[in-house]
Image 1 (cartoon, rainbow, N blue to C red):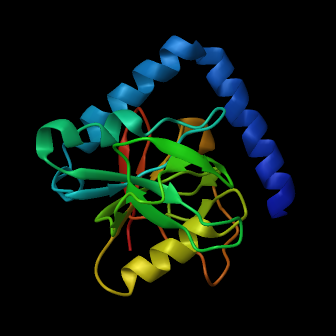
Image 2: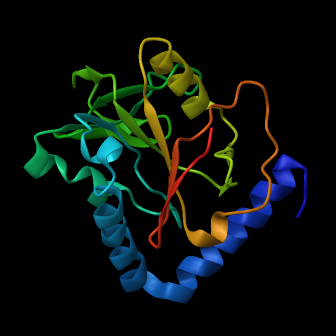
Length: 191
């Protein structure tokens, strides 16, 4: 496995893409729904009142079915919002119209800002110690660090099984995950 982050990202994106092509659109959709059943059986996640999610792109595992539980639990769901490409990532309520943002569609600028209890985190690769390799912008690490200054915030890495690797290179500013959720299992990260 390459140790250089750039090379590791390239390899892991190709692995993820090949996996999703192998299972097809129907398999990917079923996997995302199965993720919901697994995660909601964990008291720490099932008790979430405010979710922070993301809009899946390409071959990322879609967290939308998991955050859709807001319909029957009374929780609120948020998605990333950016003023521009260099601004801090905020979570804004995700229940109304979306608007174009610097990284794609995002909640409207007038949607309420949220402080999630649980943040569903996209990733390119993850290890069993809860270290994740993201897209390289550091947005989730910075947002988690700010949220965690005030209170406990659960970070759940959303991954296909093929994204689990032996070791992810770690930087001092990287925020660890509390759980890793795949369609097959939920892994509680040992602290």
